[in-house]
Image (cartoon, rainbow, N blue to C red):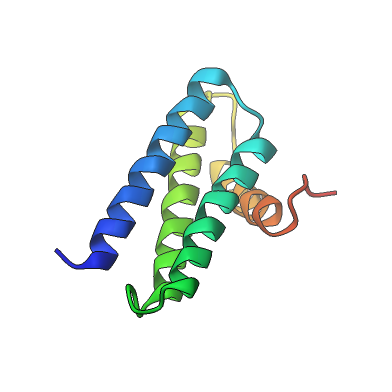
Length: 109
Protein backbone atom coordinates (compact mmCIF):
# COMPACT_ATOMS: atom_id res chain seq x y z
CA UNK A 1 0.00 0.00 0.00
CA UNK A 2 1.27 3.44 -0.91
CA UNK A 3 1.61 6.07 1.80
CA UNK A 4 -0.97 8.33 0.11
CA UNK A 5 -3.50 5.49 0.18
CA UNK A 6 -2.97 4.99 3.91
CA UNK A 7 -3.33 8.71 4.60
CA UNK A 8 -6.41 9.02 2.38
CA UNK A 9 -8.06 5.98 3.96
CA UNK A 10 -7.34 7.19 7.48
CA UNK A 11 -8.70 10.69 6.86
CA UNK A 12 -11.79 9.32 5.09
CA UNK A 13 -12.43 7.16 8.15
CA UNK A 14 -12.07 10.20 10.44
CA UNK A 15 -14.40 12.25 8.21
CA UNK A 16 -16.94 9.40 8.18
CA UNK A 17 -16.86 9.11 11.96
CA UNK A 18 -17.24 12.86 12.35
CA UNK A 19 -20.12 12.80 9.85
CA UNK A 20 -21.85 10.15 11.97
CA UNK A 21 -21.52 12.41 15.03
CA UNK A 22 -22.96 15.29 12.97
CA UNK A 23 -26.00 13.15 12.15
CA UNK A 24 -26.49 11.71 15.63
CA UNK A 25 -25.95 14.99 17.49
CA UNK A 26 -27.79 17.15 14.98
CA UNK A 27 -24.89 19.53 14.55
CA UNK A 28 -25.34 22.73 12.62
CA UNK A 29 -24.27 22.59 8.96
CA UNK A 30 -21.87 25.49 9.45
CA UNK A 31 -20.18 23.75 12.39
CA UNK A 32 -19.89 20.52 10.45
CA UNK A 33 -18.50 22.08 7.27
CA UNK A 34 -16.02 24.30 9.13
CA UNK A 35 -14.78 21.29 11.09
CA UNK A 36 -14.40 19.27 7.89
CA UNK A 37 -12.35 22.12 6.44
CA UNK A 38 -10.17 22.12 9.57
CA UNK A 39 -9.55 18.37 9.18
CA UNK A 40 -8.68 18.73 5.48
CA UNK A 41 -6.52 21.82 6.07
CA UNK A 42 -4.73 20.03 8.90
CA UNK A 43 -3.79 17.07 6.72
CA UNK A 44 -2.83 19.46 3.92
CA UNK A 45 -0.46 21.36 6.25
CA UNK A 46 1.06 18.08 7.38
CA UNK A 47 1.57 17.00 3.77
CA UNK A 48 3.04 20.39 2.81
CA UNK A 49 5.52 20.13 5.68
CA UNK A 50 6.42 16.55 4.75
CA UNK A 51 6.58 16.62 0.96
CA UNK A 52 8.66 13.45 0.89
CA UNK A 53 5.60 11.46 2.07
CA UNK A 54 3.16 12.44 -0.68
CA UNK A 55 3.81 14.15 -3.99
CA UNK A 56 0.14 14.66 -4.91
CA UNK A 57 -1.01 16.95 -2.07
CA UNK A 58 -3.51 18.97 -4.14
CA UNK A 59 -5.12 15.83 -5.46
CA UNK A 60 -5.45 14.40 -1.95
CA UNK A 61 -7.05 17.62 -0.71
CA UNK A 62 -9.56 17.56 -3.58
CA UNK A 63 -10.39 13.89 -3.03
CA UNK A 64 -11.05 14.49 0.67
CA UNK A 65 -13.10 17.61 -0.06
CA UNK A 66 -15.24 15.75 -2.63
CA UNK A 67 -15.66 12.80 -0.28
CA UNK A 68 -16.86 14.95 2.61
CA UNK A 69 -19.20 16.98 0.39
CA UNK A 70 -20.75 13.85 -1.15
CA UNK A 71 -21.26 12.36 2.32
CA UNK A 72 -23.05 15.52 3.43
CA UNK A 73 -25.16 15.71 0.25
CA UNK A 74 -26.08 12.01 0.50
CA UNK A 75 -27.36 12.55 4.03
CA UNK A 76 -29.32 15.56 2.88
CA UNK A 77 -30.85 13.55 0.04
CA UNK A 78 -31.76 10.78 2.46
CA UNK A 79 -33.66 13.22 4.67
CA UNK A 80 -35.68 14.72 1.79
CA UNK A 81 -39.42 14.46 2.07
CA UNK A 82 -41.97 14.06 -0.71
CA UNK A 83 -42.91 17.74 -0.31
CA UNK A 84 -39.80 18.78 -2.20
CA UNK A 85 -40.86 19.45 -5.77
CA UNK A 86 -37.66 20.46 -7.50
CA UNK A 87 -34.84 18.32 -6.18
CA UNK A 88 -32.40 19.25 -8.97
CA UNK A 89 -32.69 22.95 -8.16
CA UNK A 90 -32.22 22.22 -4.47
CA UNK A 91 -29.13 20.10 -5.18
CA UNK A 92 -27.58 23.01 -7.04
CA UNK A 93 -28.29 25.27 -4.10
CA UNK A 94 -26.87 22.80 -1.60
CA UNK A 95 -23.70 22.42 -3.71
CA UNK A 96 -23.33 26.20 -3.53
CA UNK A 97 -24.25 26.22 0.17
CA UNK A 98 -21.55 23.66 1.09
CA UNK A 99 -18.92 25.39 -1.06
CA UNK A 100 -19.75 28.82 0.34
CA UNK A 101 -19.50 27.73 3.97
CA UNK A 102 -16.34 25.73 3.22
CA UNK A 103 -14.67 28.75 1.60
CA UNK A 104 -16.02 31.56 3.81
CA UNK A 105 -16.81 29.89 7.14
CA UNK A 106 -20.28 31.41 7.36
CA UNK A 107 -23.77 30.86 6.02
CA UNK A 108 -24.37 32.47 2.58
CA UNK A 109 -26.01 35.88 2.81
